[in-house]
Length: 164
Image 1 (cartoon, one colour):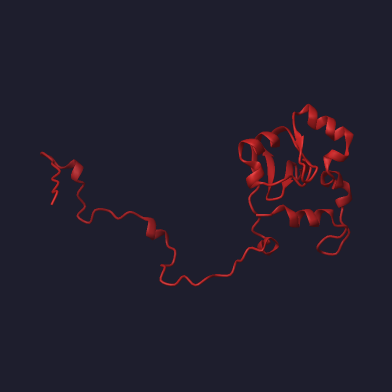
Image 2 (tube, helix red, strand yellow; image 1 turned 180 degrees about the vertical axis):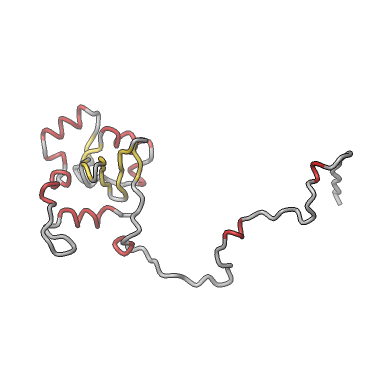
């Protein structure tokens, strides 16, 4: 799902959603393709990374390893930012997700539930027809109604199978 595009538009806009001026200018280097900067080209080459032919942004370092081992082109799409810091975490935006560097390695960011309309996610309830309403009790196992655990009874046990 293209989760990063709306965020990208918001970040590079000169005006925030509340109408005030944005500070995006300070972070625009993350939103400018690294292939346009010789210093970034050299850095990506030293990391054994590469640049996306579609967007010009790099895939290198920890993000490169995760991208390759998790079918990144299929699930994430092309990178649409360079790696940068957000809220104390190193992140990189891709067409369909955001990757984060955590203490446990790289992982995709969860979809933020606060604005599903930005992703065109339909949140209206649908008619369930004859389906039962969800209840945790649907997944509980019932105990033996006689209260006897047959494995604890003394004596021989047998299994009888009838092929008729």
